[in-house]
Amino acid sequence: MATICVDAGTSIIKTVAFDDYGTEIALARQETKVLRPAPGFSEQDMDSVWNAAASTIRSVVKELPNSVRLISLTAQGDGCWLVDTEGHPTGPAILWNDARAAAIVDRWREAGVLKEAFHRNGSQAFAGLPNGIFAWLKRHDPGRLERSHKSLCCNGWIFYNLTGRMAIDESDASVPFFDVRARRYSAELLELYGLEWAERLLPEVLPNDRRVGELRATAATEFGLPAGLPVVMSPYDVASTAIGVGAVSDGQACSILGTTLCTNVVMNQVNLEGEPSGLTLPFGPPGLYLRAFPTLAGAEVIHWAVRQLGLSGVSDLSALAAKAEPGANGLCFLPYLSPAGERVPFLNTGARGSIFGLSFEHGREHIARSVLEGLSLVIRDCLQASHEAAASLSNCGLCGGGANSDVWCQLISDVIGRPTFRPMDQEVGAKGAFIAGLVATGQEEDFPSAAKDYVRIRDMFEPDSERHARYNEIFEHFLAIRESTRPIWKRMADDRVRRAEPTA
Image (spheres, rainbow, N blue to C red):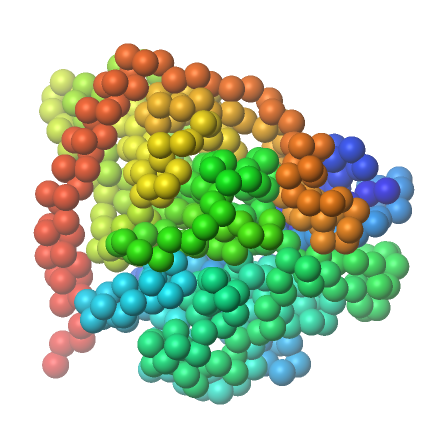
């Protein structure tokens, strides 16, 4: 029998069918459009997202020779997908990388609100979360809030269209209103943000043992599937991808080289002390948590560099970077290119990218190498922010589009000083949803045993000791340059605010 898994990313929705052995037997993809109607805005038309997901499901079902045993879903996380009592969108989805609430988040940070919140839920809030978006809408579009009944996530939106249930997975619910230890919404956190009124918008949370719904009749008819078919809301894409790589036990790690450069470490305890950094997500496996560090700029930085250097594709950038020696002849690239700044392992809405050390001695190959090195140094920065795992880490799984580059996979290994590996599967998020679906429906006992059965390693990259020693020095330079640049970020951000203010 086949298992259908939907992975709804920000730019592409993929539906994959797996056979009983966890092998991909059908795949359909469809691009989705991100709308940017104003500076800092990042939105999607919710009906268009659902239609794209439905189209890929239909395409896959047509290819299947056997019956379907379940549908499992994962999707982009965070953001705000508001619907009314009838389940209709009250406007476009506001995405995880939206920056309209940046000034609100800055005020919360300056007032110590974000730090206090971190000590309650282990996550660093940022502009693309419901707390900031709710506060922004309250001021700028209160009518939309009045029309809205629940705030879903992308995964919840697709789950609703398939099952008729308005709900959210624990991983998606964990930021910003979740008590991560009690695994429930926190009235104290709502009060801390001054958002007690928003409690009515929060949907039912589906924990690990209640994440299964049933395919409703209208959707069953549309797809030619039986009504009542199990539909599983798996953890959102960051967590499902970790599962798909096989990072399901304490101390295991992976890095997603995708739209967001997301480094994840699995842990069996919650640390709510220290400086706020990253996210702490209740993980699918009971008793485990995922320390996640999803940057606001990942592979999109590479695509930007490809365009600026006049290259034809990402493979050309890797080949060009391979021509330069480690250190890129003294260049240091800060890859903070998102208009929303950066959120991990530090929060700074004014963060911006730069290339430090340029001279006439540098060529395109040095710039290309500095881009890959800058992104790799961010991965190391995130791993070190998870202090408990930094010393004991044995290896790091790599996936996402960027993992197709042998050059980058080797570079990451050299930078972090640990072996990196790639799984056999190309659609790793969907494989994680596959595993989560089998466990949720009782067809597999637990995540570790299922991962052992279904996750297969494609290849590994061992770190070179000399290059790693060189990158230890470069990492210190990277941090020093970033710290020296912070005051400039602040002045430039203040200038952008002044220029955006209407004149009298």
